[in-house]
Length: 507
Image (cartoon, rainbow, N blue to C red; front, side, top):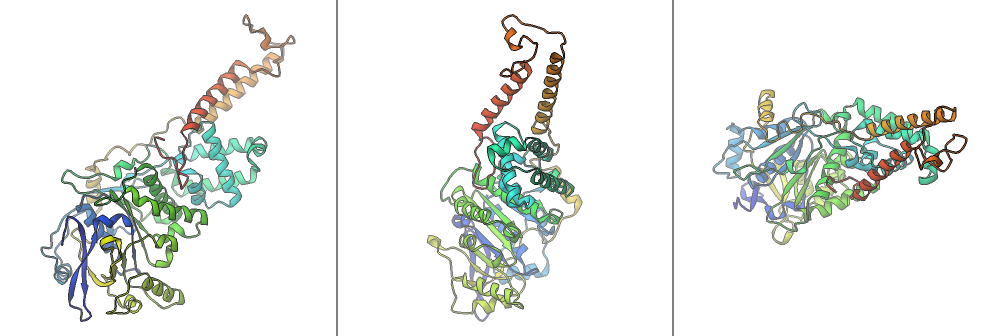
């Protein structure tokens, strides 16, 4: 095994079930993406853990979601259990070393890891519409809202910023309809009600600052190993749309922020999408097309994307075609759809004359998989029936005390703990409304014949009757509009939205 150029996955078996050869993932093709599929309880999480360990040891940072808590064990050293030692002997893993890996725990709710936040401005209208499951008309209003925020320099950092902007849009519905098309108060109201539901589901914890820095997902240790960022997702899975939208946003951020690097000796980052079916379930075609485009192009940024799901039919065909490294665990074939999934999985492999792929998929034991990795020149290897190697780290979850200790010693400890609420759309719109009220009160006082202050050379601001000329502004109004124009124009010039509509920081 060439440990510096490949990751040892397991050992393939001959038809008589004897050892055949080591199955490896070549690091230079690690950015060609991958797929891990199989029914519940067949060993997908262990395969993910083995790959994450291999990438980390090669100096490649990893991001993955921990759906059930099992993956957290990668942070602790493994233990010599009988069935693990036996598997190591079967795949000729000698010596079988145990080790712990450098892990950074993250949690959108800030309970089982460092908080992860993003601003609404960065998320963009497409992903926000996906998160909120908006209708086509409501999505149109959302696009208008972001357009107004960009033009008028209104930062959308958290949910109250978006709520206040929507309230402002409802007040200006007639004016905005003339500029952008029909903006109805019922559509705005429906979006506002959806925001309240999101807030009650805990989404308010995610939106805000300090926003996640991509560089913190791409850390390496002093001994050259890649950090493994583990997202605690057991609670997050209660809101699957938020989970899926967050991962799409993160992939979009990686795509927009990382420079082109071409083909490297190994990836700069590997990204695992667990429960990948949630990314595409009920997703509009425009979103699926853009995800396919990101997956196709992001490999040139040095990022490998690995989808983990039960059924290969969960992945759209255009995305599936981009996934070169494949690990297929057992599938059940009781229903017509399951039988179709088995056939689809079998047809995506380069056939092996030693066995029927479709039959083998239904007969695989736990911890066994059909494996096909990219070989020289990026050609898929012939599919092999493979015993997956045992992990070097702990198999199973860590304890709460162990988790707290790792979080406290994390390289990002304290950086994201406290939320920051700086001036943004909520405060700016409140101030604008107050200034408008003050200006109106001043005008009413002048119109009622109150004392009139004059400035030499500015008498023409008011007419001879003491009333404000129709083609003039009060000093307060002029100042407000000047500030809004200057902020709006400077922000407007900086607005560059990417394929998924997200706004990359620093642009």
